[in-house]
Amino acid sequence: MPVPDIPTLETERLVLRPLVEDDAAVLCELLQDPDVVRYIGDGTIPGPEDCWRAVAAWLGHWILRGYGPWAVTERASGTFMGRAGIHFPYGWPGPELAYTLGKPYWGKGYATEAARAAMDWAFTHRDFLALMSLIYPENAASIRVATKLGETLQGDATLHGKTVLRYVITRPEWEAMREGVPLTGS
Amino acid sequence: MTSIDIPKVETERLVLRGYRETDVDALEELAADPIIAPFVGYAGAPLREACWRSIALWIGHWALRGFGMWAVEERESGAFIGRIGLWEPDGWPGTEVGWMLGPAWWGRGYATEAARASIGWGFGNLEVDELVSLIHPTNHASQAVATRIGQTYRGEVPFRGGATGLWAISRSEWASSGDLPGGP
Image 1 (cartoon, rainbow over the protein chains, first blue to last red):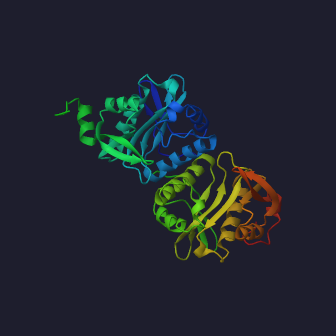
Image 2: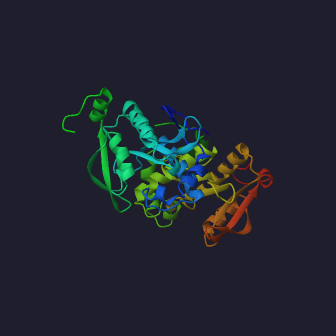
Image 3: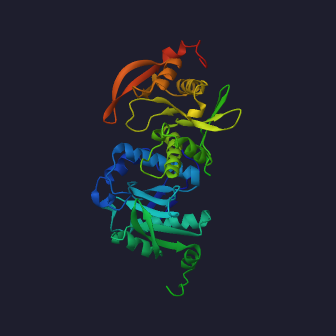
């Protein structure tokens, strides 16, 4: 049963499409790498059943919230590389601009490209006042992505009992960035 | 809210329907009871978060499988009283008919009524030979429901590092169970 109304987003090198069942196994393979899961949730390596349930719950997230995560695929090959989108389950510190790619796909600017597409869609089609990325302080790669996206450090929050940094972009900041206007004081 | 086609199934006293965000409140009340709490996943998360995520998972199961657990509403009061339906996440030992009702609604035959409707819907819409139920050996209330819906005990099966009781009803058993409430 397809979930209606999840849009497909295309960028120069990527296609962000709705998650499907087959993505669960591929995602799980990517998440067997400790370097990939280190900064996700409580850092536990998931089993196949956990991944299936995660994909199911993300589709349920779309239905409950009207937004959620996409499958990030490489446009040229169709390869599933990870997920990116807006993650805001109940109890979360705020609507998160989240991105996770498998290690083979790091270092190519894919996370930035995917997250930017998700961010543009979210500010254009939903009424968010701001989006935030929640990042463990030692996750330098993710902080670089957040910075490239135009997010700035705005305090911290607690996730899974640990402190995470809040990298935030507000709607006016996003609009100014889209128009190419330099922001005063940043 | 994005929509999904969770079919509505009506019985004499119950409505089996898709979820609303307000069901999270009702589920949270039910799950405050230690008997119900284990049916809500995401152990360790605060209860309300766990309830929200469980409902997201139950909806997503429909999206991935084309069947799943319904929200069960008491027709007369409109109250959300639990979730009943079909369940087969990755790695599950069969297509399960499962029931979870708040204890305040036990003893009225509601679980039997909704489970029978789920079985009828399942055999009517899915290509399955049997519908199983996994019931803990000490859960006598659920064993009684299993018997009333026409399931028989098939033995112990390994489950999550331990063992649990497997009950099942085959398609042919269901087809010849017309004398049971909600039968074909």
